[in-house]
Image (cartoon, rainbow, N blue to C red; front, side, top):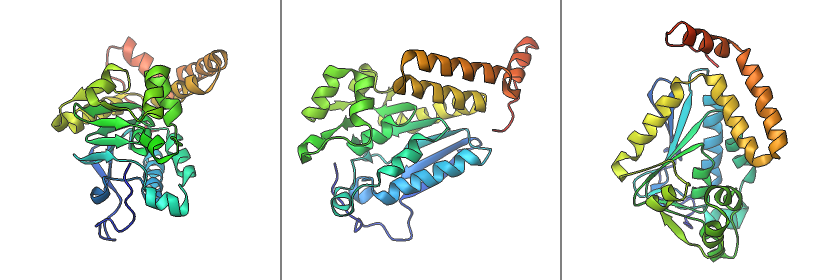
Length: 262
């Protein structure tokens, strides 16, 4: 976890999160605090939430990549800031509520809040030599933005216990082997691989993607019975929706579907 504050060498005019749109339907949010290894300040989390809200409502963006730089995705929370002011926990709620599919592209360090940010995404691409962990225990605290819950669900209780209670780190290769990452590639391939996934997501029916994302999230949050009932309701609603009708018609007519804007 990095302990950098606001005097991080970044000029005031430079945004802490840079927005990029490499192609239609796909957006990239790049954390931009390199001097403190992209430590997650309240300003960073607010900027992420603002950008995701705008992308979700613009009618054009279908998938979003969140990334850092070659040294760090994010090395943790801005410890100096939250020790003085407290963390903005509510900012994470905006991230978790984003209806668009999110792809984390991780190079370098993803520690503490950085790993929690990556795990908040729907798909995770990691560099082979990336370092992922929850070292909060070394500061006498514990993960507070989903680390104990998402990590345990992803890798199982045994490994999560070592990572949370002992601060064990995983390499990118380990993360893929234990089901924490969808793809593990050489560092120079991380962004291209993330873009391939985002491009594929952007081609899917947008309302179906949003509904399916909600249903998958509910698998964590509800009993199986309640989640199955919600899944059934979402399925029936999609079947009767314009995208659902178009998808079925296109299949029967042996053509590519034309999805409407969300």
